[in-house]
Amino acid sequence: MKLIDIMQLLDAEMLVAPQDASVSVLAAGAADLVSDILAFVKEKTLLLTGLTNPQVVRAADLLDLAGIVFVRGKTPNREVIEMAQRRQLPTFRTQLNMYEACGILYQAGLRGSWGDQDDANDIH
Image (cartoon, rainbow, N blue to C red; front, side):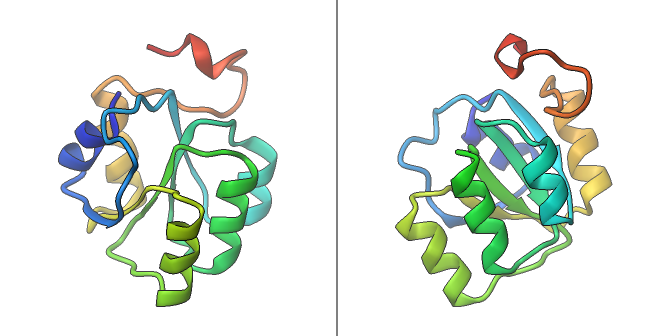
């Protein structure tokens, strides 16, 4: 699924523009704990989170994630947005809660990056 499609599905506001909005996202994962993000989210995954602190951007950069969607209308402060810009990390905000946002993406065909899945690259 393309980032531009995800933006439309989630009625998301762009905070940090992707270099290429037609880039494919292989999977999505949702977490509000940095430890869960580091333990379970695979590379090239889109992260949905309510965390708005700098650690979420550092974790996303470390794991080479496809981008971050802040849920529940949360807006990170300027420091966090600037950090995402420096890392060229696509960042969005949606008014949807995490459950609704994940459900919409799942219904549209984007699968998760958690649990027993062997390889996020197998997700179409």
